[in-house]
Length: 398
Length: 134
Image (cartoon, rainbow over all chains, first blue to last red; front, top):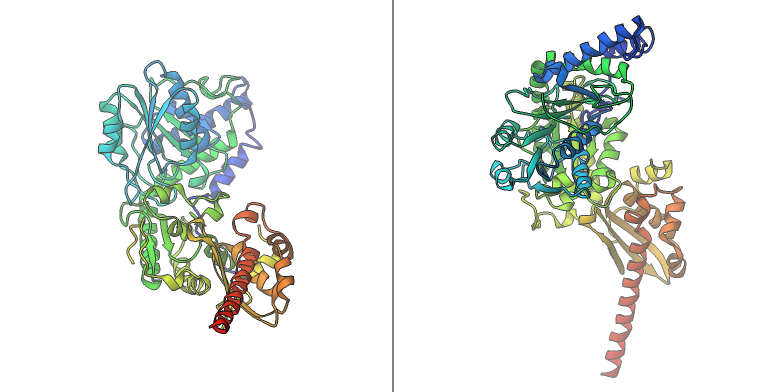
């Protein structure tokens, strides 16, 4: 059976050239970069080259890049490390309601250390309001942490404006850019970003790799203690093969960013328009234009997301959902509910995220199989008889 | 994550729809939780002659609904009342632990439909009595 992978926001396949590079650093170049012999030196060179490759993707300098085990560690390191280092200056942190749990739960954990956290609301598209951010800033605020691109609905936050506001107020700005690094142009100088989180496996690099960019002169209390690697900011022998892979994946992503994203945007539009046209009672979640080129998120009224995913999977299509049934909890996606979408509509959401290998034919195939799947499940759904009813909480257009 | 039996009932659900001349209807769950099950049945001579379901919900919700209709069709009311949510899950070869509470409500919907049937029967008897007394 034909298999189509439309879950690139979850993870991506590692590129062949990246695999080859990592294998070299597991076999012939296996030394520990902290040693003094020649086995070490060649590895150290590789690691520093990777650091420059990552830095190049976001217009940072190599010294500003700390390698981590992934996005989650980088988020934790940024938020906890900075909060502890600047606790004497202030104990207030601002974040948003649609952050990844690696940010939200880290902020929550800091509340137990005496920090206060303001969680900014978002509008129906998932945008945070600059005025709301400005109003939330107090003399005690030390950090604003707001994601660049939302992982579920693809909304691109106005981070250059957020950076400007933070800088004007003397507050540090961290952005979780896991979904945007290598996909949306990033410039930490221009956008006035102080800390930035990136992940390797979202850009065709290996899992277990990531980085934190920390602007020059910014203090961070380390979370790991030991051998003093990464200038004492992240102890532990470097994941050398992973770092090599992350570096090469970053460079390649940067090279093809513009052409690849333009190509995916065409396919994305084809998928969005095709589904909204062919299937009644559907709603696009997120903004029509100000979304990442790879993201489609649509709610199908009167059906439940997991049933849709299972049906798609049976026909070879891999997607994800904001339904509670796919999260292991009883609550649907916190992102969709923060956008004012009512629970039952959130339960019926499907996210499809495109990637380098997605083709025109793939999208046509999905558009062909989707309508009968929805029709079958709706025929089974007792809610479909009541269609057209008003959903009080929802901004849904019927 | 699902057993073959669950996937079979999800892909080819048995007894989907509404029994036209139903004399008992039961609905459980709510849409904001992501699961609604509705069972309609026809009971004659204490036997479940016909039973159908409609479900809004995940794979487990649909499969358990389908399974419960298969389990009780042709059975007596007393036998049907013996069926538990757990028994339905077992008949499907088990469900993932997280689904045991949220999506495993099919027996509840069945029991509600039987209650509805009994209520109507009593009402019928009462109405008859009323007529007699007049």
